[in-house]
Length: 152
Image: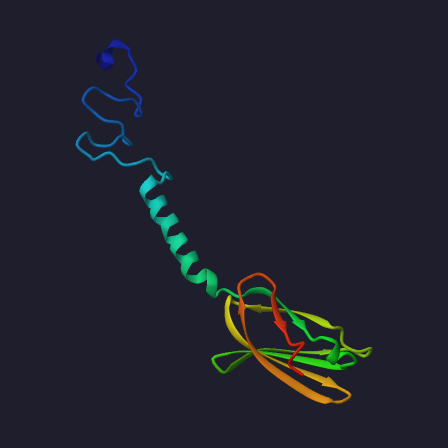
């Protein structure tokens, strides 16, 4: 058709024979994946990385642990109990508990530490004097028990 035929020229967005639309890829260009879509392989690598990180760092992350200290009847009437945590000689945590009416036979203490082995020193102040005991405790998420009933 010629402009003299009265036909309107083609709109600029239409394809003309032998021409490509401005946003169409070249015929010899490699196909690219859709934008925003991730393949399976990167997701598998990411999941494996997260699993390895959790396996390595999981036991080293502090979490709430519970210690049950069995003081026994010999500590009845104790006004204070001090519990000190250390690892390889380095002090980590300490708690001083006071009991105006006298300590119970069993004392519970919560501490935030990673799983592992710790030295725990327990000092009990009674009317007869101060006594101390040191024991090794392994923390692993469950309540650990420290039996001091026969230590005095």
